[in-house]
Each structure stands twice: as C-alpha cells, then as structure tokens.
Length: 216
Image 1 (cartoon, rainbow, N blue to C red):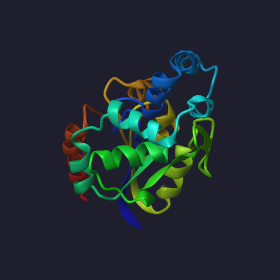
Image 2 (cartoon, rainbow, N blue to C red):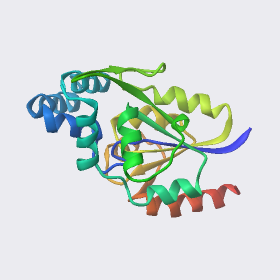
Image 3 (spheres, rainbow, N blue to C red):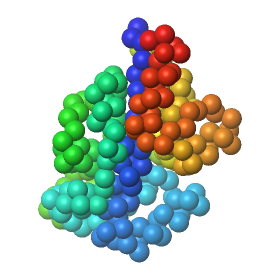
C-alpha cells in the first residue's frame, strides 16, 4: 500500500473563479445568474447546473477556450506545489476541456490520466455534457473516488473549496479547505476536522508540516 495521495479540486481551488460559471456569465448571463440563485437555494443540482450552461452556451470549442484563457486564472503556487507533491489527482465536477486548456495556457504539465472530471463534446457551436462513470447529483461522485483510493493509499488528503467537495472531504483522512469558503464553513457546521489555507504557497508549507507529523 502506498503512503499518501492528494486529491485536488480544480474550480475555485486551483483557479481564482469557477471556470464553467465564467463561461455562462460571459455568453448566457441571465440564465447563469438564475441558475446560481437556484443552486444556492437547492433548487437545482450541480449536475443540472453544469449541464444547462454547457448545452445553452452555443459557442465553438475555440470560443469556449478563448473565454477560459482570458478570464480564468490559476494560483501562482500550484505549479510549485505539484512539482514537490507529485502523487496527486485533480478531481473536478467540471470539465476536462476547462482543466486541460488552463493548464496548457499556464505552462503546467499534468498527465491527462491524473485528471478526473466530466467531459464536454463539441459539434460546431453546440455542446453537451458527458458525465464521468462515477457521477452523482454533484456531477462527480468525489466520495466514491476518495473511498476507492483509500483502499490503495494509507492516507488520502482532500483539498477543496465548495459545494461539490463536501462529501469527498468527509470521506478523506485529512482535509485542507480554502479559508472562509463554503467547504470550510461546511466542515465547521458538521464538525469535520480540516486545515484552512490561503493559497497554494500557504498549502505547500502546511502539507510539509502534516507530512512531518505523519513521519512521511
């Protein structure tokens, strides 16, 4: 059994904004704002939210990618973090095209097999969501992945920030939650132990402290 694995959420954790919401707010603003309200009120699931934005965007793949690279940033410390702590997967309720486009644009090399997500299929200016084999109302069943990896690793560390991370975090051995975001508040509310972090430079230091504590 291997020692430790890091499962890292993408949108809002690695990125500065949610990339799919950014697509929606750029091309279907009114629809997206209505969806955001309904998501917060529990009237739509994350799966419904994501699928609606993708199906109604009506833009080509190149237009989609251009929006991402012009409006979504990546934490400057992320590259250094994964160069040091290289036993990781990016685990996202979002889409492969978002992740791959932004990593490439920021000159960050990640093996595509290290990315767990849903998918977007484009046909001209139409697009649709294709779900991961392990999907749920949260679009991706992160909890199931955490539990499966837990059979192969002594320690599974979950790193995230928001709604889609709640169940995955609760199943992990250790949780790092972005400070003052929804995952941190959820952990506080449900007495889930977690370590808050400000950014990936801060996370780098705190993970090192955890590994020293564990003797890894």
